[in-house]
Image 1 (cartoon, helix red, strand yellow):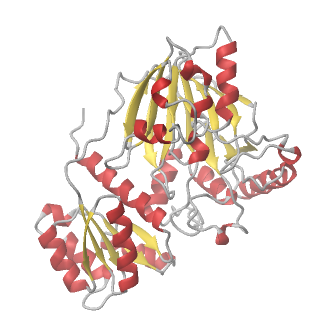
Image 2 (cartoon, rainbow, N blue to C red; image 1 turned 90 degrees about the horizontal axis):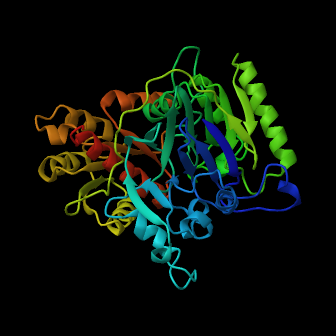
Image 3 (cartoon, helix red, strand yellow; image 1 turned 60 degrees about the vertical axis):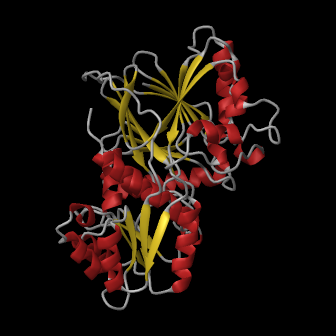
Length: 443
């Protein structure tokens, strides 16, 4: 597979003298499969240059697959300026994660309404097909695509692309689930199960393109914003035994010189771990060629169609602090969920059994029974719906011993206080989509 970077900056386009070398456009990456299949990862302002290149190059295919990690503006603002979408006869498949009850086509149309742009989505001349994705796998041409949810204050997907034995993982806008997720004793995996799952998603990649917006010093003031410290990304890649790591989604305030220093710091961290990992900062215009190795071609799996939901799902919120219950209930009701509440552990357990919710947000410290005790009781319940319900523990405790105790009790994930409502919405959507995906019959 061949890779070319067209936009590498995060959050905000930042052209100017301090970003000349690494680039100032927001995310857009071109990937060519072994058979020439064209995949475009994200459609930030970098997509303008890619589109002009595709139109001007007679040998370049003008049909392709646009895979969007999430619909925050810096990842879709290039859609109205991506020239191949305006050419009749072209065909483009556009993919993005689907929130329950929301559709990709409607979301993209929103930024092209009359108030914001003179051309509507319906006026694009190319044939466009929209795919609302969940976690799963499918194939486009000779490329096998695997998707997995990332940790961000919006429902976001990472893409693992496999073709001819070469593997690229694109995981931008992702925040660790636990403080210093890959810090561990020799041979010990990351403590949080979701961080271990992320390492598995990156496992054995020839190239990881990963969000690395912050440094360790900056991260404490940016916790909950949905991005990773570059140093911990190195730990992820080392644990995954990857070959190359491209630091990506550069902070708009980080100059070229500062990025040089960050790359060297990351290389020193990798060397200290005894790793041969090759580390560089993604640069606009840079190309990376990954040699194909013998491997079975992916099967003719089809991408998922639109997500379908029937009626409002119920979520149980249990916390003895009325202000937290109020914030969570308002946040979830905004997305159309039916919310039931409890302010102690005993009531929470009773309502879990009577309401049979799709997901439970459960405070650790409550009267009657604490969150661990409630979770243990749920996991012993005879009703499989109650026994298997995802439980997200709400806690201010961040120590490794607390995390381990929760997972031993059967906790699914953690929501750490203080939290941002946007992060809650994204994590709830991810867990509900994942559960529905696991329950769906396999093809």
